[in-house]
Length: 600
Image (tube, helix red, strand yellow):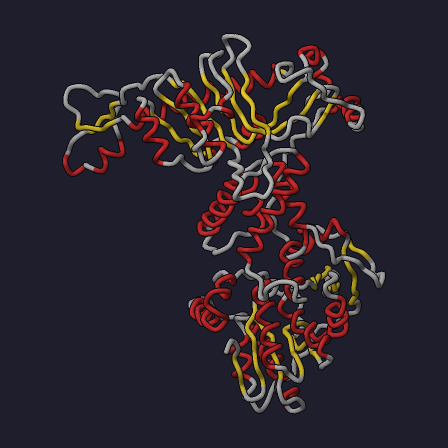
């Protein structure tokens, strides 16, 4: 059983504003089927709080004022466990009561609690027992907390005389004391401060993005699960993963950049480690956005924020006054995160206007030998190829490096790590770089393997080989999106690489896609890699992809005296990869004169 009990009172310990706790209240209500529900909310605002619960999933704010006329805000949202108790009672048409003692100037208190996500794995009972042990080591409670507990105990005692089964939803640090005090025969008279004004309002859509304790995505998914559209209770880790995945789709649509699968792997690993550093099991919203910025870019982080903070149930059909609240008004403390979005230049409006109507643009090359590339993009790709050459050489050099005790020369410097590790030997260890390998002859970059067994329809079904126009360009073979699928200007087509191979020097490569030597390759990526091995005049081939090549291809390379250097594509800058992945094809050399007007 996940609840405490005394006579006919069944108590669920909660932490306010938490999805896992709200789900436990919902499950307890369905299991116990109580005659009434009592929650730890101020009794002086009973009617307004019930009205707020009846409006769920719409967001409400109950406003009162203390004796100094400072506003007090009570947020009513789906993932608050107390409001879940009231809401469940109203839906079942049974009585619901707010039984807490209202107090003025309640101090801000931060208790160190285990991450409530643990309930998803160990259950509420074991979680509560661990919290009890943690609370036992903390300081004595405030006098006002004692008053609140005895007031709630008195109200529960009164309700127990009328109802046979009472569900009590109370704070996790108060609930045990309240149940013990219910046994009393006498209770002191306690008076709550008078609230001259108690008003029910709602918030604007802009405020809703800021002030919800559980951001909009979590609240929305909880509401869908509550309605039976998905599993209940929801798993927060799965919700974060689906948030990142959905934000990736928006990112691709709005920026045109790719969002490969390894981004999701990096994001989930980053957020897991970030949460563990702060002694949590799951990341908070700030950590989720920080991970999006660090693992992808600012544009993706903004898409994540926009999707995560959207809340579709804010409708205000009963016309309540709308408040424009900030996070400081409700929660006081906050962290700031800024997005530096990559946007088109302010002077590009004329060209953007010309690009709107693409229906009149045609792409009609005189033949396959009439198409050509855009020189600006050629320079970027060649520069990227030079970078991969240096990186591949550096990896091989580091693999051949060795560390040995100092004898006559410090070689390439003292190895501090090894020296400390062997400190008991009282010896210095020095580093000696490996022998520089031969040059890099070919480079393969695979963005998407696009294997037929994984997709019913191939996305990258255009295969071709380009020869370098001069000595500074390499030969290139690639597979990409269809040639005339996305026309952005007269005779100008926008395409996207699935993968490409570059080989030096130029003017040597045949059409590898019709070469029978590569008929046994399992994928397009393997065709590129095997051709890169064949056409490499230097002993090193750099292979960039999401997963390493098969051992058979490594053996094939060794047979011809070549070595494959694998670089995980996740180690490279996603900003650079997005810039490289998209390219443009012109249906004639004359289009190079006007290409600048249509390519951004």
